[in-house]
Length: 252
Length: 241
Ligand SMILES: Nc1ncnc2c1ncn2[C@@H]1O[C@H](COP(=O)(O)OP(=O)(O)OP(=O)(O)O)[C@@H](O)[C@H]1O
Ligand SMILES: [Mg+2]
Image 1 (tube, each protein chain N blue to C red):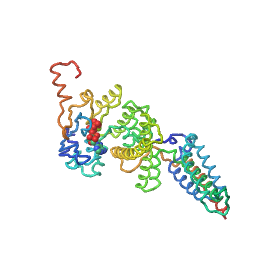
Image 2: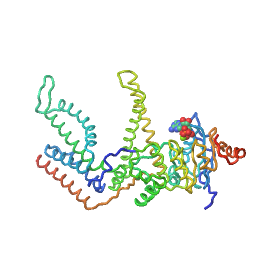
Image 3: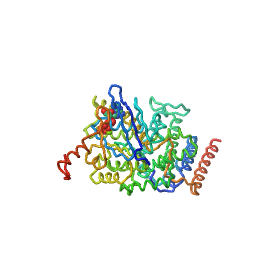
Image 4: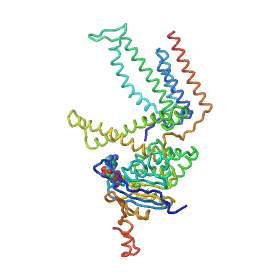
């Protein structure tokens, strides 16, 4: 069982053929990942933000997701300015801060957020079964789709088991302190988590097999390459080509 | 069709999770079309294990399994027949994995090659049959324990299997839901094996009960014979033990 908070909406994006959404998201994300100039990165971030707004998903949930990713990005901000070699640098007492490092960290931040936002808007708005189905309809090899889907599902299995274990230690009055008991408990939690998640994963897979699953995903979602789907890809592709052009001009 | 058609035939089955503690020893079992069998046996005696062996989820260390007259040796053999046998897992959390109820219930029919329209139709009919019509858009992980159990049953029934293997279908259910399941079982024209600790339930839904002792399946005298014995003394008066 998977929590898919963005999947059950009824916005225009939810109603666009999932295959088109996947293709558009992939093309756009790759292009953004290759962008390097601030104007194009800012434009991309703005476009992604608009896409999220259009998809009508809960902005609160979106920012929660963003927060998780940005915690990792903070690491770049801590490390890059101190370690990245560049011409311009400032000395603050014993430490040297490189301007190139700061610029790089900022670019990584813009890129990651722009890509993440578009993935939320285009991809997270479909259920995982639909995603699997559209990937195979896009002629991605079946084995690869299966691997992707299973990995995705097990992440949620692990999260679910983790919450269960947390609840069970909380109701028995566990309060983390800096004691041996605390460390031992955390070690048990992690160990238990791995074992339980893998066992549950086995059992869910068994249940799928019992219901005739043979490695192929089907979906209840209608796949309909209608006019609005074509307009949608045209807009995304058009914008992406614009980004690439801008990038080339700024570099040229 | 031949009433005495053998559906499941297990011969000399040995099974152990770890070598020094065998769970099933030289077990024989034969299940015919139209049979309604109850299994009542202590916790940890190997009931769930037995079901999983029948479905090919576990492999016996020796012995043979024949289903619908075909020897079951490899995974493809089992994959071939699984949709004809519906296994309800003891833990409903293992059974449900799609986000919405309707998607989960139509997972089986879609795998069996039904079109999207047919799958939705069958799923709606099944949900309706179990009194779950309002559930189709509910999120599976937000259901209560008992609701999950009922929806799990729907996911099994939607494959329209010829045989049901129900692993403790009543646990965690209230009286009303219990009678829903009892009624559903009586109404359907399927063969089934039910694992349960509920004597009353087995009494009304099965014609024969077996138990596991020493790793073998033997006739059980707690449910049917016992009740029959008492019937001589108390006549038609319903009574409890
Ligand atoms: N995955 C496993 N690995 C090792 N041992 C197991 C595993 N699953 C079950 N067992 C053991 O095998 C025995 C039989 O388990 P099984 O689940 O078949 O019992 P059961 O009759 O269904 O019990 P219950 O009434 O509690 O559901 C138990 O002693 C159990 O500890
Ligand atoms: Mg059991």
